[in-house]
Amino acid sequence: MSITAIYQTSQPGNFPISKACRLGMCVMLTLMLAGCGQAYYGAWEALGVHKRDIMVDRVQDARDDQEQAKEQFASALEQFSAMFEVEGGDLEAKYKTLKSALDGSEVQAAAVTSRIDSVQSVSEALFSEWEAELEQYTNAALRTASEKQLRQTRKKYDQMIAAMRNAESKMQPVLEAFRDQVLFLKHNLNARAIASIQGTAGELETDVAKLIEEMQVSIDEADAFIEQMGQTE
Image 1 (cartoon, rainbow, N blue to C red):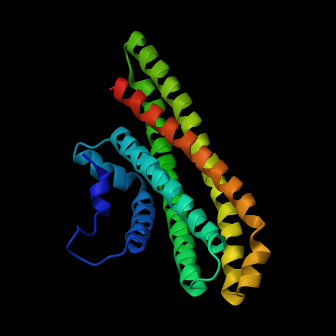
Image 2: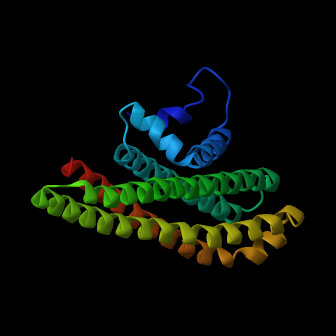
Image 3: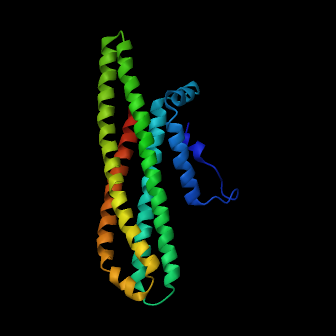
């Protein structure tokens, strides 16, 4: 059973809710639901959905949000570079497109952070429960097997969450650089001002490329973790 259904607030052709609005609602709902603690997990378990299922579902969501973030940051960089590609033209229109790309990047970055937080929340709850339940075994062989599986799962999880947090940490510096450029252009929207910041395009391109690379590492770790969880069912 997918937890993602909770976040589906609209379908194509129904309510005119923007992508940014839907992402914002997802972030708030994730934080609210994650904050319910054991009562939240208990309610799902009563429906046959256990912490393990929720964890895998959230890892999948975090992976998908990182994929979207990759695309969003690449788009923002493309709009920033477009400011220098053609002389003349409607600078105001270019600025608005760039500002919209920045706004989308900020929303997507917040969604990624929220997803990672939710993964960490349910994972810690699962591992604590798993550890405590080891004491309930009367069969030593089964306990040993379960304990080994726990250690393997925890090790893979630690590797994955470290990759996620590493990629997450690279987002804010890139966003700050974008914000500075957009803020400068807001009050200096002319050819001379654009020329004065053109030298930063290469640096931003390098930073975004590194961010996308780290996100891909995180996405690959998430895929590997999901695969492992499937193999241990």
